[in-house]
Structure formats: structure tokens, C-alpha cells
Length: 300
Image (tube, rainbow, N blue to C red; front, side):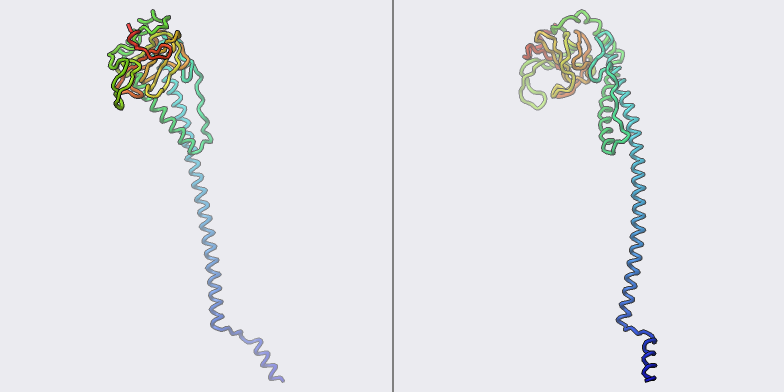
């Protein structure tokens, strides 16, 4: 009995024996747990670092965006000043004695247009704004080059002579003078189409002149069109009343606005080659009750 008790006690307090298979399981489980812990730590560190990188990139992007906003706003202000200067120069070319300052969109008598607020503009908004400014810059470059030509001694003297020599026609609403002095290169009526071939009806006369030559109203009236109009390019149309309407096409620059009243001899535009044109000239039309009529019937 005593021997059996000691044997039983020795069995309960002796070392616990495990099989090799059980040992391998314990090792594999411990290794797997260690790997998971290490992977979790690595992933945590990676996510933290990545989050910090994202935050730094966002901060850098916002700083760059703020710099772009400031620079775009500054360029926008300068562009507005250039637009105002352009309008003032146009009015100088037009001449103080040829009528009142334009009172329409873009006229020097208008209040300055307020530029859009860019303090919270997105990247796409800034791209759109810079694209629009690029278009405005290109227009101003062409405008200033033309103005430089017109304000030269010879061209400036030509403008002044025109302004003085045609005052006697100021009250006339009957087309009675030449819009420019030049050579007629294409007459009224059917002709071969210089662009695209074929035959077409030419509703006016083409008068060849140098680029930037001042063009004047052939009678008093009200400007009904002053802007880009299809193949005419930059077009001025004047309603003289009594069924008479004149058109002046392919201009490089317009010096009047829609709704403006002009008098005979007023400088209304500068010659160019915009629209469907093969070279600088003035396309001049006279319409009577809506029907194109040969301008040579009215030219002195």
C-alpha cells in the first residue's frame, strides 16, 4: 500500500513529458505568433510613416496652391491694368474730336471689371483662369503692336487729317465717302471665291490697305454690330437710318462698341485680315433695306 502511494505521488510530481509532435506544434505556434506580432508592428509603423508622408504632401500641395493663387491674382491685376491701358490708347487713336467715349462693354467710360476672388480657388479654377489670361495677353499683344503702328508719326498724322477733313460730313446719314483710301481688289457681284474655290456673290468691295490703316464711318449712324462675325472676322455694322446700313469687315481692331453713335468720318476700326481673308484690306458693304447694293454707286 505504501509503495503504491509513493509511486503515485512520484508520477504526479515528476516532469511532464511531451511527444516530439507536440513540441513541434508549440514551436510553430510560438513562431507564428511572433511573426504576426512583428508583421503587425511593421504594418503599424509603415501606416504611420505613410500617414505622415501624406500629411506632408497635402501641406506642401496647399502651400504650392496658395503660391499659385497669389501669383495668379497678381497677374490678373496686371492684366486688368493692361486692358484699361489698351482702352485708353484706343480712345487716343480714335481721337477726342470724333465723338464721345464708348459707353458699352469694354469702353473707357465703364467702371473697371472686378476680377474673380481667387482666395479659395481650386487647382482647376486656377488653370481655367490662367488659360483665360493667356487669351487676353495674346489679344493685348496684337492690340499694342497695331497701336504702335497707328501712333507712329505717319499713321498718327493720317488719323488727324481724317478727323479734320471730314467734319463737313458729320451730319450726313447717307454713305458718301470712302472708308479708306486704297485700291479696289475685288468688286461687287459674282466672282471666283479666293478661299475654297468655286464662284460666289461678293456683297461688297474689297479695298486693299496696309495693316492697321484707320477705317472711318461713311455716314452718321448707330453701331449695331461690333465684334467677331463669321467670315467677316472683326466686323463693324452701322445703321444710318432711312434703310441704309454699312458694313466694314476683316478689321484687326475695333474702336467702337455696339450702341455707340458715330458721325461721318469717325475712326471706327483699324484694317486687318481677320476672318476669311487673304491679306489686309477693308471689306465694305452698303445695304439698302436689307439688300446688298454696289458701294460704287455711293463712293465719290
